[in-house]
Amino acid sequence: MDNNMHNGNMPLSPYSKPGVELAEGYFPFQVMGKVFKPKEALCKGTLFPELYKPYKVGK
Amino acid sequence: MDKKQLKLLNELMEIGFSLVETNLYLDTHPTDERALRLHNTLSAQYQELEMMYTDLYGPLKATSMSQFPWRYIEEPWPWDIEYCGCNY
Image (tube, rainbow over all chains, first blue to last red; front, side, top):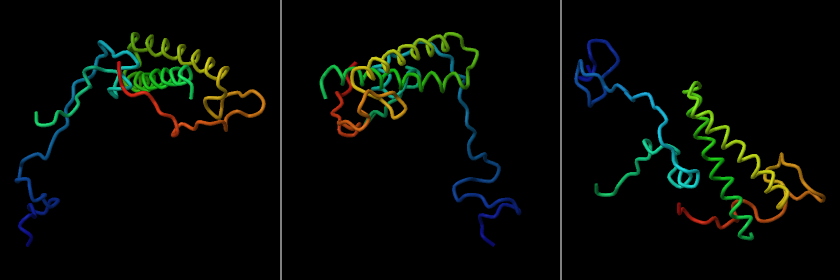
């Protein structure tokens, strides 16, 4: 039997252990505070400073 | 494309994008009065700019009005325009 079978349930992905939840999404409800000016918003790809999170190389 | 037209087009894109953002935020926050005021302010600005653009340079969109002859097919097309980069 494939050792990934978990007592008849959906087969576990190879990476999870029995009883461990895969993931649970969580995000706080956004409340609009400061906003970027339109020019800056278009450049940064968002109107909301709290959502501007560019990936920094080698951070 | 002359500088003034490019500047007006840029402003339309900036306010248009901000309107997408206020729209999406208001979809999940319909009672956020401040957000709605911002949306309506931007919307009024957008309409004014669009009218100005259309009077000066012809239809911005295929749904805009046009002087004679039909000006929507004039150059440059959006993908041919050298937009100024990001500096705010």
